[in-house]
Image (tube, rainbow, N blue to C red; front, side, top):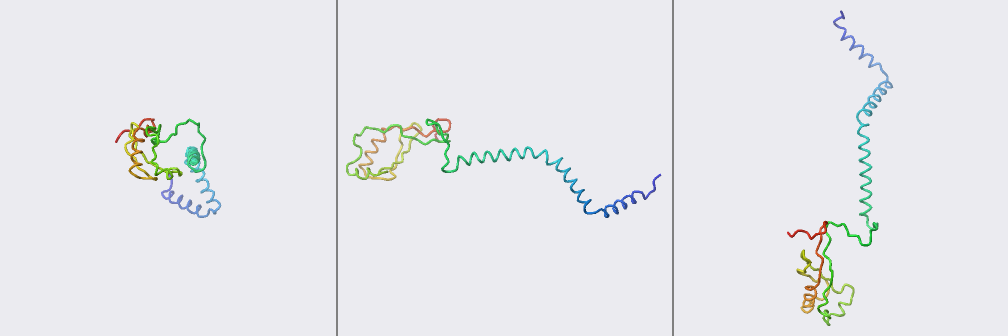
Length: 168
């Protein structure tokens, strides 16, 4: 039969032994615990985390390469741009009025960007409205532009799927 105070004596002996341990032995114990923690907890997580980190860096480099100004990616000459929305585009300009520019504005229109017009196009490619951004804005010029733009053909704005966006 073990003595009744055996548990107390064992605890006292362990505490005395622990207080006598040198810093070298304590450091070895901490190092052993850290090594066990690394093997059992961090090692299974390291492979997926490392793979995720390197794939994130790869995606960042590819996206940055496309976004940095001055660096261009060469495309096929007839390639369709992959924008989410492609703006409306002029297909053919009406040749209805032979000399559409009024004579008093010939010198202004001969300059670079002599006439700059912003045209609003519907989903069928028809002109709805226009605004003269720069150039002569006279009644005669507006009359000539009305005739010319009304009979011009436009490609409407296209969505990513190659269709005009739904009317809102």
